[in-house]
Length: 257
DNA sequence: AAAGCAGACAACCGCCGCAGT
DNA sequence: CACTGCGGCGGTTGTCTGCTT
Image (tube, rainbow, N blue to C red; front, top):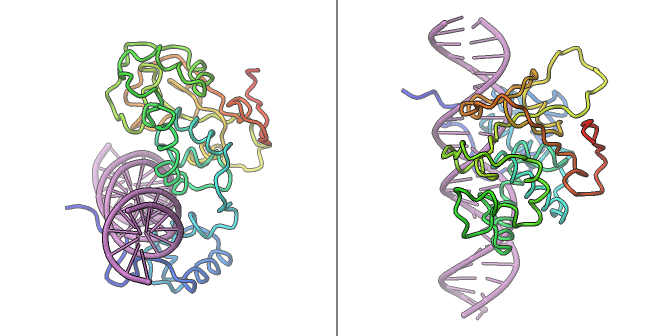
């Protein structure tokens, strides 16, 4: 019954990391690189669960982390991405260099939720508070910030009055199919012989969100694609300038200019 | 000055999907 | 094709810190 624990709990430390543990972890990863988290603690001489090491590295020790306050621009980006993606923190983090999913999740729960509420917006649905979720298609355009994105999702088709997974997939647009996958806005100059990146890699580096039934090799996650019956593919460009934000070094090369 | 409270953030837990066998 | 292990993700909890009374 149930799966075996990821590690030997009896001999692992829990709680806050000490400086020495951090140093060991950093030194080990610098020497050997990331990967094989399960065996890493032993190899690095840490009495920690591999998952714990991974989390510590990703959320705190990675050298490319910003670890500074979120800017207004990042705030708006997060809000916009959340409106599209829901609680897909890793996807959102993939679009915010130097930010981690955990950081964004925490920031969302502590700051942005309140910010949206103070604006009179439901942080879950990104609709004005007090508007019923069904048939709220028209109401969804009340908020200025959402106009651009919502207008990008052309239809407010009523047939998918989704009642599935309301937490992670906001039902903006009155039932638009948020069957999400990511397409690459710009192909890397094929540096690697590997035919396709992993889904996470693609998601982390991508700039486009594909709504509907992707016909590319990038497919949706099974969980999310389960409800999809759409045969039409709609791509929403998430390049920063398309989101109405400037200062991003990313250039939209989606071709849909 | 002390106690209580709320906010912020780090870390843990359990589940899921993918890849390998 | 089924099974298993691992990595990753999202939700939740625990703890620390600053603020208010």
